Image 1: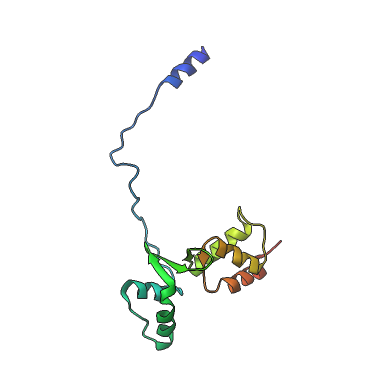
Image 2: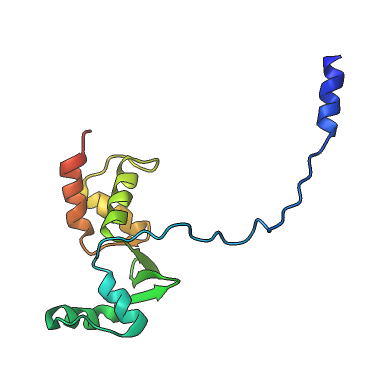
Amino acid sequence: MATFHMSELLKTMVLEYLQVPSTEEPKPALCIETEPSWMDAFVTYLQSEVLPNDELEARPVKRQASRYLLYEGKLYRWSFISPLLRCLCPLEADYAMREVHKGICGNHLGGRALAHKILRQGYYCPTLQKDALDFIQKYDRC
């Protein structure tokens, strides 16, 4: 008799009509403010062509802006290694280093190898090499 009840359960189908299609983009629930990073001057210049007030900060931004691209709100850097490298803020760079070093694709690399692996994955941060060396010295417990 138990098999009879199971076969009856398998023949039923629950159908639910959605009022809103499930393929719509989710609306952001919370805007998180981040601390200023090296990318802010480039993003501002590429969006509205406004340079920083300080001449020492404005000169490198204007000179290097041709190497960067703003696409869908994200900053990318033109590269010889790959078509575009996604620019990372310091928090994202730290997460990428932890994930590559200890995560599913990690094999506990040294500092330089860790930085090169992150670059090959398509990410960029101007202080990536130094940050990777500091990360290995600070967090490596292998």
